[in-house]
Length: 134
Image (cartoon, rainbow, N blue to C red; front, side, top):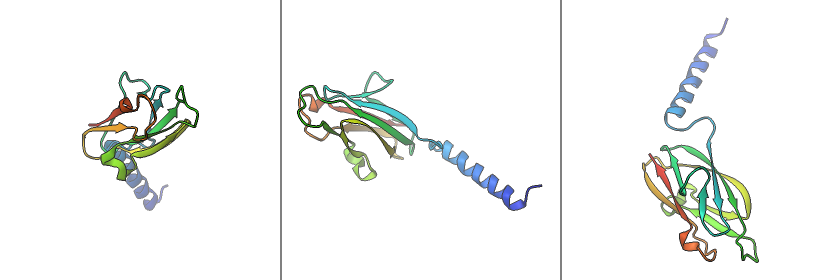
């Protein structure tokens, strides 16, 4: 027979988990694969365009792979930055290789441009994509 305290704790923890899923915060963050290509472009795996779609407040794991630029003589460096969300962690410095970053989509629905703000060479001006929160 369960104790009343353990029953209450089970109900409360189930309620919090249900609320988190309802608000778009699943127990495990959703993984988004992004490639910063050797041609200085962002590519979101599984999407024709570099677009990430998220729910308000959703936790995302961005698994970013940076490919060396064709003419690179030094380690490749980029950034993935949303200027209006920099203070919320959306300003990540990217180096060659693969690394995972955990970020939270803003609560405010809208379209947010992410871009490389590091002068990375030819094609730099085209190195951007969108985060669509809906």
